[in-house]
Length: 366
Figure 1: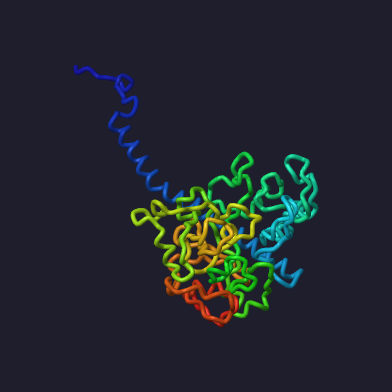
Figure 2 (figure 1 turned 90 degrees about the vertical axis):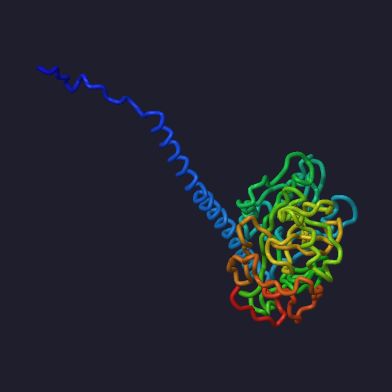
């Protein structure tokens, strides 16, 4: 009689074989590789949305200010200067008067109040309106306003110690229009913001929905980087394409070896110099930024930049936030500076026209 085995005596497999385990690991790795880009894209989409919301908040703040004073904020203003800490050199940026409309009234009141309580050392008596915008001993200049930071630009907002990096930053700058030399102390400008002068909605005869108020900046992380860095290039007022020539031909993310560079973009939120808190609409979005001189107050080509793929976000005169492709029509990149007076059509295509407030231009879809 054949011997029978009961079910309980049969040997069952106790786990995965090595081959099965390797197959499972390979499948998991493939799934991760497939899903990771989607996760990264979703995260960037969320960051980009936050940047958009920040611009909406800035646009609303500008219009609330306009409702009170009948004009938008100045591009450059402030108090005079006699000696150290006596005033802000007329270098006060337009973000300062916007503070009460960005839920930052206590910070604004500190700046307007002055006194020793605003100093880190507790002894310097700062004037109302604040001192020079590079004073790291002044508490308000080192106070970061969250609405001024785009999370897509993830580098630290401030460095430690008392160096220049201690000043709070911004990822958003005011539009000076399509003028190149007008980016330096122009009291009349083709954009909405100028030195010691305020423009209002009534001055935007090209249409508020066709005119940029503010655009994105990339904060400087390394002066050699095209995004966030500034190259020192002369002659761009007669030929803006010279700025493009500063890019390394073998690596378009950095400036060419031997190029003198600076790290000004977004560096001091309170400073009015266009090199730090401004843009102009000469070269298309995500183009390099180039100054005529190593001093941060000089004129130049200060392109709007972002870490979003393919372009930048801007807030228009009607408060709408638009994404502008870096491939937008930018006209003749070798055309000379159109100057600071209104009325002349921009030579820099649709992008240039979006920067002008009163040049009798009609802008279609962009």
